[in-house]
Image 1 (cartoon, one colour):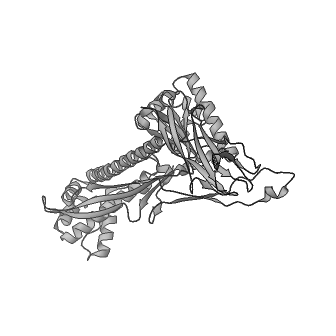
Image 2 (tube, one colour):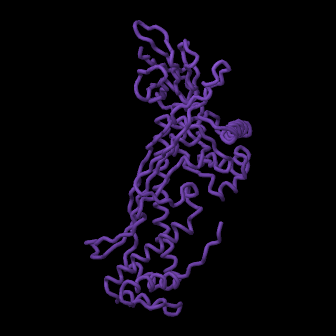
Length: 444
């Protein structure tokens, strides 16, 4: 981490005065430690327009110093999303080639057949627009009049209070976004006992090792609800912990379970700690995910410091307005460790992109449209697809992970009255006895 620069009260005042004097006719003098207190009197005598400019620049300077420099590595999730600028709205696009067909020595052309790209576009997004009030000009003048040390403390406290409030609201928004994703079944749940002793830590370590190895060594569709074929290098991994688990395990167990030095994780901003009841009412206690899972951006022009007239005090006061977009990328890998007693799936629904009818030679995409969890428990939409119908054409098969159904050009299907249908089955990874079926009607 870069060493923080010492900021003096005189330096702050002179920086702001220089900015004000460039816009208004020079009225604010250069100050030293000896003349610092005198500046309060001169600012109090300045015209309202100059005082307003002073307050605006004070807010801007203070906010951006904290926002972009001094707090760069301290806020939760700050390492993940930085300070990107987004023009309009966040859209995540991804393309993924359909899996190659198995090589058939009797028909080599099958292996070379081309298939359309899978194109996904996902909107999982929420926003936060909040305002944080900054001190009035009278408070600033009083703080300057108390001396350089007092003013510097006032300055840091005032700006830090705004920052902390904004950071807290960010975390609340992210927490609620995660909770909604969990309720919808869009997060892959991994039932493992909470790591509170050596045996439970070992069990979690095995899961983490296996998942991280799978993500890094090969492409997989198993850990994102979009079924996107992707991988995550180890240096792109981030970790999230329930604060009670963090308190019980840091410095030893977590470092062992996640193959990292815990203090290094904290220093690098790759270990994120949230309130014990924050995620799914405490059912989810840890997570491992690709850094691209979260998309958080400030809208153009925000944070923004603006003024408003307070009729009660007859003063122009300043407020900081923050408009931030939060999104979760359904194409990114993530695994969410959950108390096994909090997992229970009771049913679900399948749907088909473009409808249930299909022509010979089509590629149909089947997906879990809804999931039902037992009361007070959680479930997810992850599982495997299979064909219950025995195809009469060897070119007909289904990708077990993505749900893509390839229908052969000569497929007859099985008779069901006057219809010809293919019966697709989805099996939950949380309960192998829980299956959901979907009938695909073939156009004759």
